[in-house]
Length: 289
Image 1: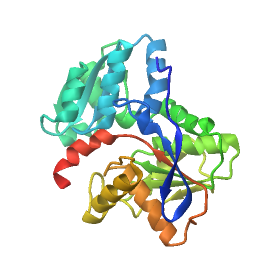
Image 2: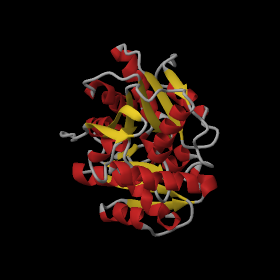
Image 3: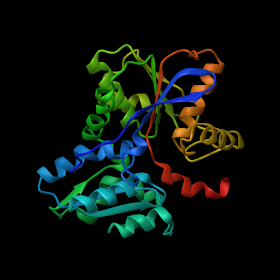
């Protein structure tokens, strides 16, 4: 179903670092991008093994997960439906979803909170339907994300990743534990009050002392930005040639530079940043630039 992967590790020249590397999951696919590819890999295998033909999932109007699910469904022979949070809108992301054949059902924010009830109301009697949680959060997604660690051919002092639901971080944590590595895993929640990410990770793997949460790099909350963050994106992209987005990866990369400035990590440490893709999220921020 997903047979080929292209996710090289690239060393980048960025002062003051001498050993800063990026795992380029953003290059895996333009639409089933980065960690979304990894999350969906085993979810779709399970759906197929269960003889399901209709994927049903959830997300906001600018959700990379919805685009990825729509593209993956079309390529793999599944029908797809998404419950979209909020009032009915049209944008570039939802256009791509629709072109891939995904049906969109807009629901108000209050009703959206109870996803299990929504699914039951619309698809409870549909034996072909398969529930995929928002962002793909599941044990299957964690297993897919853990493979990031097994693909690495070198070891690192630190691995950094941005976190929304915590699923990718859980996979990385699980992979580090299974490989017996001494690497520190730095998780950068992109939402306010991101300490809950530790609880989400603990649902899938034991929390160990290699995990470090940095909860002060949300820049106001999910999908929020500041002039400082936007300036960082422009400078980083211009100097490295690597595109990053304001919602996830920019906040992670910013944290690396800031933590080095605070001497919490050192410029000579071997550091790997996981580029989780999601660059289409820039479309929802275009007026900010």
